[in-house]
Image: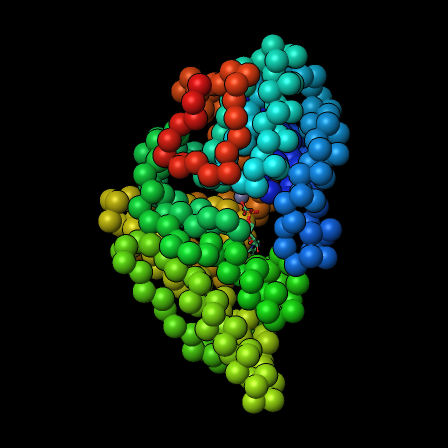
Length: 338
Ligand code: KG4
Ligand code: ZN
């Protein structure tokens, strides 16, 4: 079965064609990240406008690269939540029009379920149940994946998402946007123990918090400025990155064990972080657990993961009519209205 996936929830206009949830026939992305970088973050209005300008061409390219016409696909899958609402609606409305015109089923996909499905693109034998951390710019969820469309969230961030914390600290250190790759690059070869940062406490055993950690990093910068001292930027970037990676890794394995899962996955934009990947791999090896990492080309936002999850949603009968709406937020455990 061949699914066309469409993703416009943030600053990437993306379309892809995926076969049976596993084989990527094409994967196209037009990003407004360079323009967004001028403003130090995503400006929703700019994102929406760029989606409108790019979406027809991006979808046409994805079909062309897969050597298919829209009549050849079995369904059109689209991210229906969560995300910047103006951005989400561009994809949803385009997908609705396309599905209607081509007389194809329309499949709404939750963006975070899509991130989970990015694991299938790199691990052909992976099947639920397993336990997964989805860490992105907007979310940080510790998720038990019981089935392809069955999820239980064991923990989440109580404030900033991990990627958001990277972005904010990078901004304060004048390292640029997006912050995750910038901090990772600045931290290369630097001493991660140079600036001791606190481990934030949370009420929920598997919840995490990054706001206080971000403030602690910013305080280092502000205090040094007041005293007229220089901050060792690479060392602060390394200390911050180390702390975030430790918190994510520790919580992932504690939650997975509590959920009785021996297979773990790492997905979302932050899953591209090399230190986090190393730490999670070492911990999995030490605990004798099986680890699946999202392939680097599918860890950030893309439409292949939406088409992959769309396949499983379609098999589960989760299609929608022309009344489909887009949502800024929606629990990943809940299906969309049909
Ligand atoms: O999943 P994603 O592409 O978009 C959302 O759904 O939010 O995640 C983007 C986030 C950004 O905050 C970015 O700074 C972070 O992922 N990120 C990283 C790395 N690459 C991207 N964070 C840490 N290390 C990286 N190498
Ligand atoms: Zn994402």
